[in-house]
Length: 112
Image 1 (tube, rainbow, N blue to C red):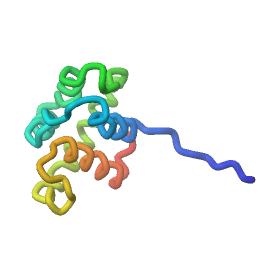
Image 2 (image 1 turned 90 degrees about the horizontal axis):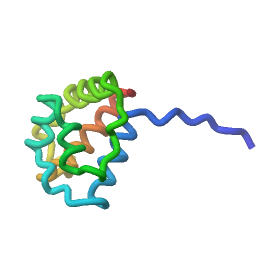
Image 3 (image 1 turned 120 degrees about the vertical axis):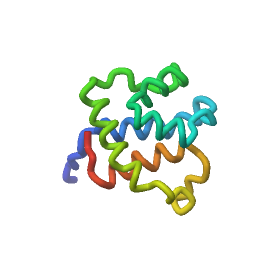
Image 4 (image 1 turned 180 degrees about the vertical axis):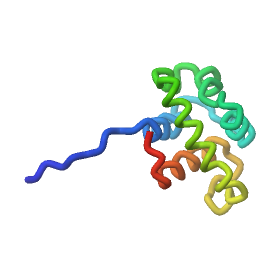
């Protein structure tokens, strides 16, 4: 059988996995649309997530340049999804909104 080569897990995929697992670890109702969008705009989303969900999200090992690239990727996709929340099944969940941003960044090949 031929051995398959798998790409290395990139940072944005890892971030998506961490964010996706949060509801299994804790209450994510604090993550609102405003929480996500302001956090991306002010570039303090990851710091807020690590503070508010201490011990439940593991992204503190990301280097500063990776954090900046993640903010750039999320900022670039956030405007394109505005107003499409119902169509994407996001509803009013900021947690789902953040996951949608991450999937959109992956779709646009923002590999970090």
